[in-house]
Amino acid sequence: MKLGLNLSFAIKRWIGGEQLAHVIRQDLDMDCVQFTWDLVDPWWPATARNAVAREYANAFRAAGITIESTFGGLASYCYNHFLAPSATLRDLGKEHLRRAIDMTAEMEVAATGMPLGSYSAQDAVDPMRREEIYQRALQSLVDVTRYAKIRGLSTLLIEPVPLTTEFPSSVEDALRLMTDLDGATDIPVRLLVDWGHALFKPLFGEQANMEHWINHCGDYISAWHIQQTDGLLDRHWSFTQPGIVTPQRLSAFWHQQHLSDQTYLLEIIYPFEQTDDFVLRDMQEGIKLLRSVA
Image (cartoon, rainbow, N blue to C red):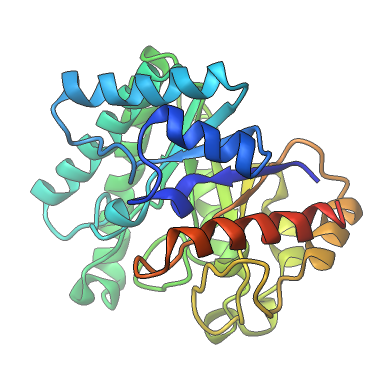
């Protein structure tokens, strides 16, 4: 299995390129990461933001760490972005992604992405409004890919989420988004599928399985977020916890589907109250469990 780290485990803890590179390479023995925007806010003033982002990128490269992509984190996920109820908020969501593209380009990373956004409570239950906003979001994504190509990026990633108030959530949503964008964008838009989202039983029922996702959307899946979960909430637990996404299940899926390039990115999110020593030990043990079946 090709393993990588989403750096969500590090936020508010290991800050600065050299310190975090040491944790990644020396303490966790990993060399492939997805850089979370929670470490560098795309909305910071550009000059300062880019300097901080480049410092991370340069330190990682010096340590032999590949940054496969950058991606929206907890802070970014709080906003409605491309699916917001007003044009002003949607434009801000578009600008948010454009600034992340700028940051990613400064880091010399080829891909970035985020969940598309959230409908308001009122719009979520109005089919006509959902469709109207969705069509506007499609055009905005096309525009953003044009900008991303100018800035030197090669791929834009969209993450499906386990909420019907967002889009895409289901396999059908994701396939529609991919086919609607196919051939219309300047660079490819692809899916980053999270195991904990896709196995959310209260929403997807019998279709809460990865085989359903890869059978319908496999041609569009570029990478995976992996997390331990119970299928009842979006847990983002470490693999030291009991749950339905065992290392053995991940390994079996990888080999049965003949995967090779679609990185399994560990996206583990700890309570901020948890001690740094516990987080580091728990990450080490979780990675050890995954490697034992790789």
